[in-house]
Length: 204
Image (cartoon, rainbow, N blue to C red; front, side, top):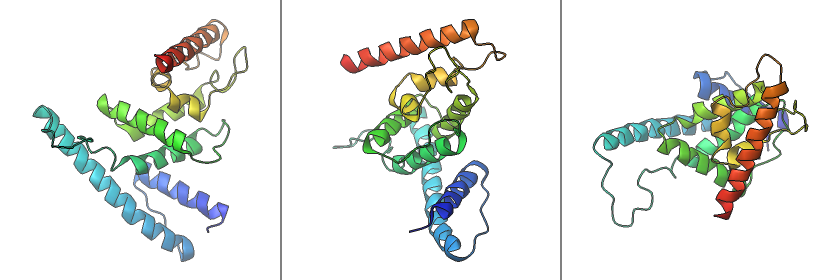
């Protein structure tokens, strides 16, 4: 088992490689661990790019024909596990004003996969989109608790709903000149509407 400090170093290296394509210059145990990780990252990246290109070509042709017993025509399951890991990493790296994640769970993985599939169906690049969502969350005073009720957004709040991430991305919770009076109330009403829609969507 790696010490916690070395784990964080590896996570930061993975994030830096994913965002900027920069590989670290490790030695010793970290170099050994990184060499095994980078091979998989590059392999997954190549597979993802190739799959996107195939999906684009198939989309221009009206979609590839379904095969007998084909439950996953877009081939999404093959790449979701690694993408879910990167969503955790991005949140931990960017949303430093929010409660730190203590671990992964099957429920969280299910929500993340649902959001990734939702984004792909809309033709949205998922990793870059999640990065932008988390950056907007980190920049939003309202989502960080600067509101009348002191409510604070969480990782689960943004991944569990099919609507919340879109609202964040569209700027519904962006700061407006550090004056949250009327806008603050609008944000709170928006939050209440979102929560109501989520509850009813689950009930229906």
